[in-house]
Image 1 (tube, rainbow, N blue to C red):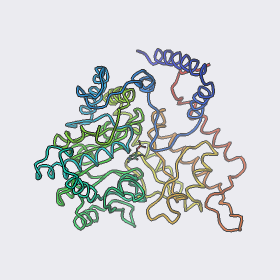
Image 2: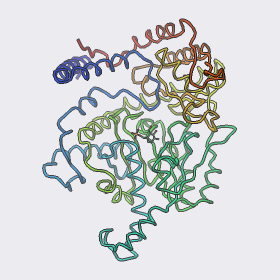
Image 3: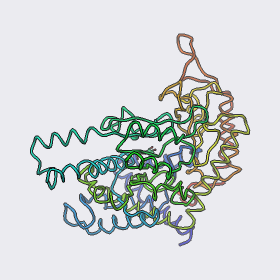
Image 4: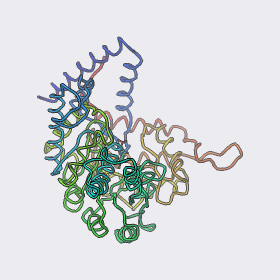
Length: 482
Ligand code: PLP
């Protein structure tokens, strides 16, 4: 089908869908329209966001949403799941083929769910399984109350080593306030204080001392590639299970930008991901595993999950089918090339970047050299129609709320067709906003970490310059709502 035909069909599908929605709750229809207008009219630089295709979006709005399907393909706790079986099997097949994985589990509702499934699968495989075997029990229901208490204690007493939040790790990698930091004894590894880069020798030394059951690699805000072969070596040296959370960079793995040692799939025991970031699918999660871990991951429901979101699994299958097309490899390479253009654009204008640059899809701008906190920078940029998120930098003096950084990512605008020149221009516009933002003062007259003043006319100038680029690269071209 041609792009024009797809646009015409998508326009009429959404036009009619919104009319039906408006007949019940017009304010939701209106907010939905407005969201499209807002997304079309702003520079979306949030590194974890993207624009899924109309095919992916449309797949989510169906009656699969109404079906309960606890269990796994061919083994459900509800009747009438034959079509969900088709959907889930296809999502898993596409995922296995795309990533070269031995096993794929498409049920997690989100990245956090995927990580919880992975944690409990590792605990089931490494702790519960051998323990049950030793006591001659088939499953936990066979245990006496006393044995069950002992096993619960064992399960709750394991160790996890993950990347620290302020070094770029995710909450679920052992951050104390998160469930991952509470269900495990946790320690964290950071990055080199001078270079901001991962130091594998430091990770190895920590792992040798701490002897974790789980070594977590992967990140949310680290602008560099990771050598997963090295991480696996470390895991093997200490007998840990290597779990890689590729939520952020799954699109770069799918698009074969990260290959060899940078591809986590051949090296990790378990890989988790979201499907909505660089992978450009629906909002959701997924787990890939080796055959060894497959049986425990397959018990994600009932171990951690309830009913799967069948409509979202269907959309995952569509998105994964898209990611298997050659065009996705071109897209993924462009995402990485554009991140370099953005980073170079900042560096050539004197801005400071964590690690001095990027080789993935993320640029982490240290805004302290502009005399601003991340919170002030994020707000001033939003006033100018540039959507980003504030982010800690390593050893951030402003903590996780105000921060000293702004995280930027290229997946979304690359989907719109932005290339080198546009990203260089984006860097110029951002620097212009930050140079013209003054930090405010508190009521007591001290320096404020939140308030700021943006120079006269700056927001309009940036919005006009952005509009020119955005008009040249429309979001969902041809999709028109009257
Ligand atoms: N893992 C990583 C590395 C992430 O960056 C995120 C989200 O930002 C998640 C997991 C959680 O994903 P979700 O928001 O879908 O739960």
